[in-house]
Length: 310
Ligand code: MLT
Image (cartoon, rainbow, N blue to C red; front, side, top):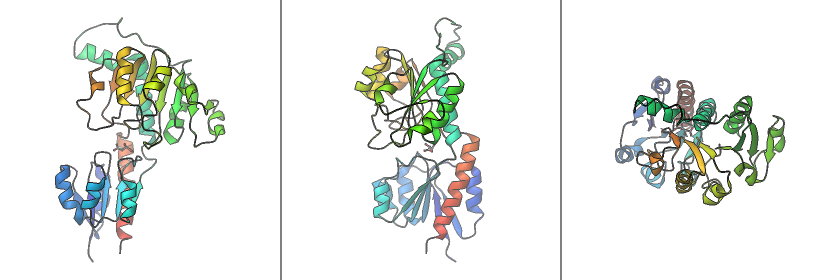
């Protein structure tokens, strides 16, 4: 029997590899450390590809992937997969939608607390600069502050529940849900985006698409409270990055917690030069638990997709 080829383009948990390698009818190609141009040279051999956020499934990728029948995105976001391009070529695109929910929720909580207490800055000041400065790093409390949640799906709703447990008043904006999903939790539902802009803290949990790119930009920041704190653990570019830089520089935004950038890896981004920001390198899905679950589900999906191919 001819083996089906599954190529793994980005790092996944070893358990995913083990599941793939255990199948006799599957040949596994480990392309995790290959530069993109090298990947494009071999992608044409594969029947199924497993990708994460480091591999853009764009026109170039799809043109080179002449045998590809399915893409399994090991994660929730499919914004870096050209879905129209896949459909035109009859390539099925699937994701692993819920395995990293808790990981993303908990990182958001870390950024929320980081935005309130600047402990990443205080940590660097003490550890790197060896400065013991208790005055510089005064924070604010989450309790009794208003948190605006944009997107009340799997992740946004769980962030909201945790924030409420900290005593925050939650206001949620999500045109795709019924108000009762929010109000049943004792939170405020709004259809007026300005209600979000008037919050003390704002966090976003939407997919990245035409509707949501730059949903927060210069005009929205201008309408915000002085000293607002913004968190983005969803996708880079949902908050316009130039506006964010400007807002932080001017002091309008007191602090931002940012896990994602419009271009990644982002090692030379103007946001990195600012003091009032805590940044992480797209760690939302990176817990041992979530990566194990994602890799297992991605591997199983990839095997089914490969076997479905005649
Ligand atoms: C996701 O969309 O689930 C994550 O961004 C995946 C990843 O970390 O690559």
